[in-house]
Image 1: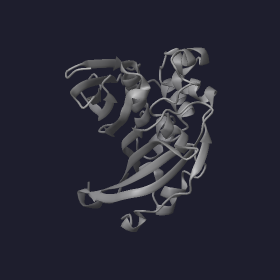
Image 2: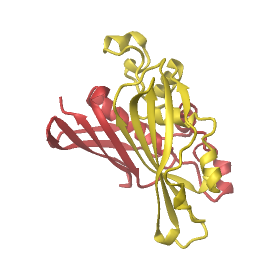
Image 3: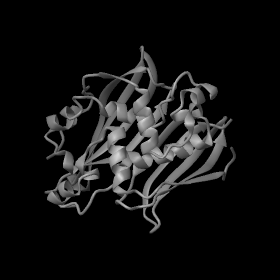
Length: 126
Length: 151
């Protein structure tokens, strides 16, 4: 891995089915992700994606890139919600390599330019 | 409602979860993971794993399986509908696998406010161990929005 290396992963469209499956698989049954009626009752216009679903897609990008045992740390900050029907694009870029560790900058953005997540990871460079 | 900083240092009762192969296959399906290492035991073993590997963020899901997970916010008087997940960090020390029983121990490490109290942040760290060996540390930030405070 060297500075400037980049990998992208296009997540599927975040349909209601995707959200229902992730709710079941993750164990996060918060109704704001799966129940539009419950959303409207508290003034939220519609369901939106679990932040951890975005983090799971970005985790796939990492494990597509390096064997999982090389990942030392992985962190994100959620900067905007991901609405239903969004198509997130995950991007990772090597910002520097030193002492055998590659430092990656991570983002997820939507086609309209909204950045929903920014993060970083440290992986063994080889 | 301001969150009392005295909660810093408090610990939730620990809990243990068994990692199930079927659940990992369901998680792979739900996250679009097509690599058979995550679903096929033979493929996992061919890749050097002793069983299906726990993917990077699934430890968070196992921690959510805590049957008392709602107690923490309820004890603070926080309505879950006012809460957002602000950030999440994982530090990995060893790979976890299907068949492992993992223990989760959580401590509140910070509480702070922004925007004059309209947003309050609670930071919790969770140590994940397997037979006493530290597997990973999860650090999660949750944001509590005060609907009555000026944003």
